[in-house]
Image (tube, rainbow, N blue to C red):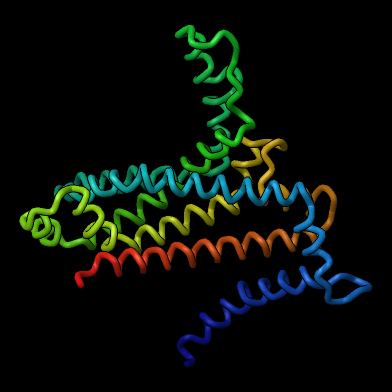
Length: 273
């Protein structure tokens, strides 16, 4: 018990107590006491509703694209047998994480700006006569978040594939399993935990990210994170900001639970009867 006391103390001071203060602050209103009024005000606000659904849509699309792009890449990386090449691949995946998210986000301004690389290329190829509006759109936010968090998905899947025995794949193929059956009945159940970890990290990061939506989306593409900033720093409505923070926390916990249950169901379907 005494051995875990420092860890429990650290967890209580820097996680549990701040979390309790946030939850309590969302229900407490000076002069009134405990009330649900702040939740009703935020939930009934059309701007907050649009920001909530846009956040879910963006985070869901980013997570889905990350799975579609990183799953085959992680599978291909797992088949590399050379230790030097494997180390190089891992280093290339980790390298973007060593760069500031702010710098990585602002770099997209050079690419997607009105006179950026994409628009200049389109005009040089005579595919567009005027600049195409790319910045300050939902697509720009999705691209920025995908570039920001896909390395996390890649690392989670690479770790999961490393734990898949090669003999299992060879046995499935020797028994006549097609590529689709190998993918659905063998690889997905055995790498489900990696999908859950990667999906949780990408979805949670997309829901809570602020710099990328603020820079690439602007005020027209309001997400919960940027709405929280406006409530806390512009209108100084701290209780509404606290309610939004609680909603973001509940959203990420619900998404993690859904992903974990889906992975459990997938693993159960993959087991032999």
